[in-house]
Image (cartoon, rainbow, N blue to C red; front, side, top):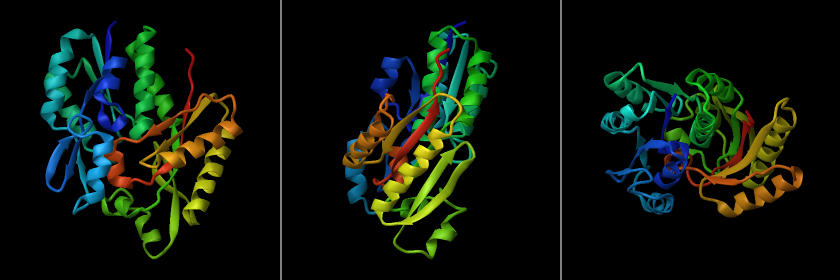
Length: 284
């Protein structure tokens, strides 16, 4: 059975990377000063941060237009027996709903739209695993079951230098009230299939970087299955490189990397997000 994998640019896939991997993607939309850009197509990550720094208002994101999904699904429908389309959490983005509407119009029996219940590179890990299983010749059922298990075991711990973007964009409705009366604090957030949760509150960026490291490493050490831990950041490469050095010193056998988060994540977190992603490692 030939299975196609679809994702979107919020999962950290550029058109070039997606083409190399054999993954089909649709672009998210970024609105800066009333101008709309196709993420990763019209606007690179570097260009996004440059424009955000000088924008008059907080940039916004929007799910891909339904026409983007319709066009892609119709284009690839006859190339595959089944298509699995993997997207960010329904609770955080309208992308999943748009993909489902398009799938129902094109071929609902062939196209499975999967809610990762995650965001950014965490969703991207599921996409990569799905494609790996496709390459191994695994069935549609096996792939979906793996994704269900994997999303429940995938997590990130991050610190955000300035959480104004998160509060103003509405991505932290449950904890905004707890933070709004505090000053000079840095939240440690846990991102998982359960949502975005406040893990810790510390003062100063230096303490936050140390605390997010401690929290992530403690979590990783207590796992009872093989996993991979990586460094993720918004636009603070120097801090990420220092974090990777400490990570590899602590876990010398890990094949860890640095991942810069997609532009659509930067809209909601600002440029200063830094943390660790943890995802199960599979060999079969």
